[in-house]
Length: 80
Image: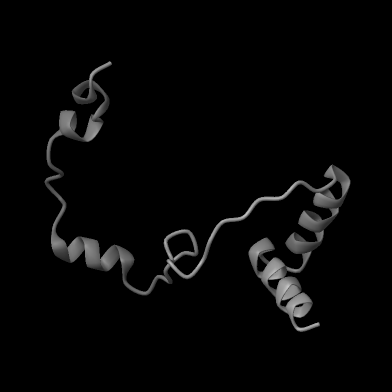
C-alpha cells in the first residue's frame, strides 16, 4: 500500500477548526508526560505473573504509578 493511501489526514484535508489558539488551549495546564520527557527512559523486565498482578492491584489501591514506585525503589537501592 502506498504512503498516500495510508495517510488518512491527507485524505481528510486540513481541519477547518484548527488554529494556533486551539492548539494552545488544548495543551495549556497539562503536565508533560514521561513518554515525551527527554529526562526519562523506558525500561522493561520480566517478573512473575502473580507478583505483577499483586503489584498492579496494590498500585491501583494506593493510586500510584508503577514508574514512580520503580524510581523510588531504585533510588533507595542506589543509596546503599
